[in-house]
Length: 432
Image (tube, rainbow, N blue to C red; front, side):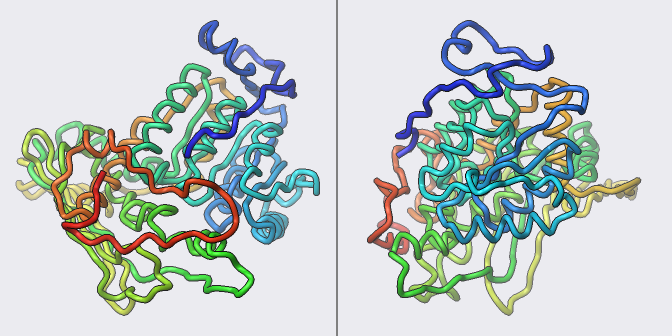
């Protein structure tokens, strides 16, 4: 399903490297792709393109313009024309409205819209439903663009493997790939993680992460919509599009756990889940709760739970337990068993959504490279691993999840009928 569309090389403004800050790595890369654009000195324009014009994508595009005074929003792409129009209107009302220069020729619509956008931009923001991320990321890197990629980066094993390959290609070409796993860019959590890694808790013995929230939006159904359009408009509720909420939302919690474990992945997961509140047909085939136990090679376990229920208690927290103390990671607190307490004290603004785009544009201007490919792939796969274990009722290993050939995406991208995948039944649903 991925990589069906070949991006043709053609001469563009990025064919001329305007600084010595970034070069191509190796003759093979030079032959395979266009030279990479790099702007330095804060004087050159950076053309920003947004693929996926929903609320999160539009928010990230706003952060991109605020990150660099010479960044301009140049192009928009989405499968839906109305999404493009809404995003453009929102951006024209933002603080950076004077740098929104999207003309009618750079408003791209349709399943192939991303192909046109990557050919005219320097920096691309990927904000589509996760199922599209592998193909769109590959196209952007092939076109020589720097990328901000929202989470998760895939919904299944084939998608994760595609992104791993693309991120290696990005590294070879010195292209930035910054992940939307935003907690990694929050200064408070960076300091907390550093202290844990420096031994403040001693050896980690157990972990717990919770993401219990209310329900999210639903856009209903219009009579003129095809089934493909209906499912894409309501992509949260279809596992093929979102990866289920353990991947789309709870991934933030799982990423924090992976971070604490210094990005060493668990070896296996056992999980349960289901639908007890969101049981109507309109909620597609996803679960409304998961409870997962992840286990590492050294025996350390993480007890993970997430749910999306209305009129229920909410809780977003991460508790890390070690031989010397414990950390309430979400709240940036470390307590030792000797009675000492450390809590992060902010010294200035710490908007993680802005921080991640600030870091991307700073790297571009300095000719430096950020590649978050390793952890964004591992954290995505950790979420997929938990979902596979819950759907199947089986204990699933990391290698089984990574090497799975089970693809969730439709065989073709076209408007029309689209079967609804059945609600997974543990003990009956195929895991991989």
